[in-house]
Amino acid sequence: MSRVDNIDLTKTLSKEESDERVMMAQRRLTQLRLFSAGLLEPHVVGPGLLVLFEGFDAAGKGGAIRRLTAGLDPRHVQVKPIGPPTTEELRHHFLWRFQEALPGQGEMTVFDRSWYGRLLVERVEGLIDEETARQSAKEIVEFERMLSNDGVTLVKFWLHISDEEQLRRFNERASDPLKHWKLTPDDWENRDHRAGYLKALKFMVKATDEPHVRWNLIAAENKHYARVAVLETLIDRWVEDLIRRGMDVPAPSKGDYLG
Image 1 (tube, rainbow, N blue to C red):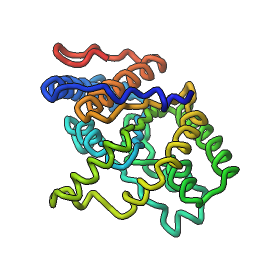
Image 2: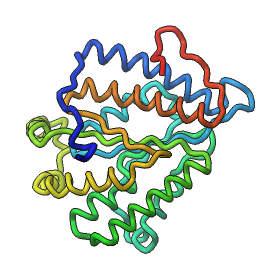
Image 3: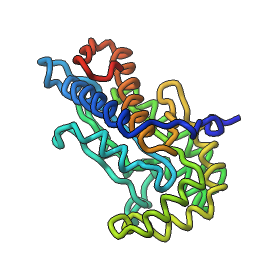
Image 4: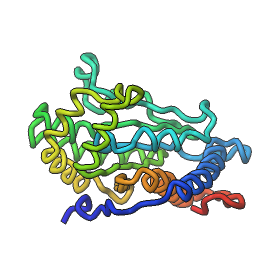
């Protein structure tokens, strides 16, 4: 059975508990960010941090990213939305267009979608064949291993929601003038291919879930739970990697998340 099949979509949190835990996590993230950027201890600079988000349309990636970056100085984090490749980018290897935005030592970048579009959108829409998908997965694994070995902490998130919850959120967006812009014809078309996306997702997780960069599969049926899960999981993975690299991670302040 795929790890995707084991995601427990019944997990929930109240808004009150979620808000409190989000605030605690944000304070801890700010501390870790300042530490890794070399702003807490002179001459101590951590690895670059790359946080990568994938998920079904309307799964809450935008809300999770906003809460992730809310407590950080805008100068200390770059958010990179990833859209379809341009004509120029299509002339190169599919990973070429991501190089410039990768974080250097002490830097932090958040990708709103990523090179995994190769194994999801491009595969489901028939832009690449099955053999190319398998080869691309191998290249992604090697690329991520190279980043990890070169000094990048990479944390990957998939936000998962049911077909029914996605439809409810789509209809909510369609009826709200302030959210209508979030809904595109492509979103509705992607819903029609959910079975194909699920198959591609299971392949993606199995093929690219490696010890150096594991997939963090987040149950996002309840937004309050998902936002906390993303922040606390990110802190845990970040601290684990800093310790693995021999860094003396500062203890959290009183009232902060302990990860």
